[in-house]
Amino acid sequence: MAIGSLSELVAVDHPRFRLVESGIFVDRVVTECLGYSCREHVAGAAEPQVRLDACCQHGADVDVGERDQILARAAAIAAVLRPEAAAAPWFAPEVEADPDFPSGARTRTTRLDDGCVFLAHDRRGCAIHRAALEGGWDLHGVKPMICRLWPLTWDEDSLGLADDYVDYTCTAEASAPTVYRGARAALAALFGAALVDALDAVEATVLARGPRRLPVVR
Picture (cartoon, rainbow, N blue to C red):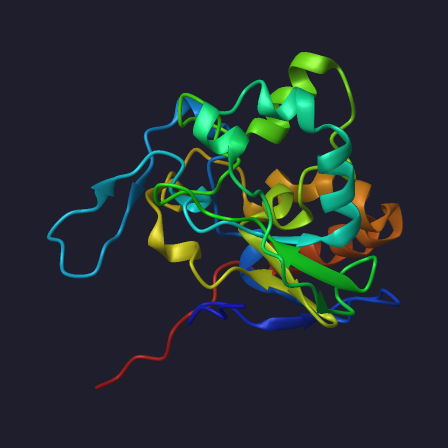
């Protein structure tokens, strides 16, 4: 995870997550992606480049349990994919042990035409999410945890911002909710109400302190 210059790790009273990056309580991110024209900061470019659904360009790590649930709903998901994406392999063949994932193992979605294979047919939004909305089924346990929480991420016993958080202009909108507030409901669904209660307490402490002051260099 990325620990920004104005952020620090703060203790959390929770049995699994012991530390949280304070930036998640003050840094912001647009949560309504379909109504936002995303731009990505590309190395060497003078201005951010328009790239719709930019954070979906790289694919995502997927718990093998989520993979199995996605495959169980393959027909509904394929219906909102481009034909070439529906026919392509959806997951890498490799499976790696990873204790940070609920099943203890993960794989990864494949990429097609410089984007995640699950970008919907019009290249806007996640086909898994769209299929859930159109079909009226719960996406919990189906849409990858990584995607539901981005740009919030976790590593062993810590929560913080994803390394690519600063690459996208959706993180620079002053009217957007904080990363924590945008991900709070998903955190509760994925890790339980006790984690949200603990993070609410940390949030109150961080916000009460106000902005950190940088030392003046003379």
